[in-house]
Length: 145
Image (cartoon, rainbow, N blue to C red):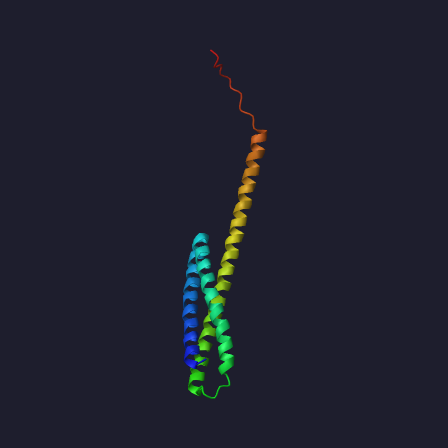
């Protein structure tokens, strides 16, 4: 395993996280409009990215443990790897913050929808009560002629 391959894999992970952040931020916009269908579509795209990120992360963990104490890897290259990895951690934390905001927004939508459904059910109940007690007014008109 050479350090350039590891740096390339770290850079690829960083690119995937950038895409992931973009999708996450787009999801927030869709939630602001309460577009749950669009939100779900982006959630599926995020799942695809997550699979690739998971695969890269597993490979990187193995590679990094192999070269951690390798004297042939220069301190400059190790520092570059640390810097890219630190950026990846910051990006992952940003995604967590976005997701927390999205979950909060989803909870608000759920509460609003639940309240609307209760209101509709109360309206249906009131209509049923009214219909069960309703009797049409008696007409004084004789329409039989």
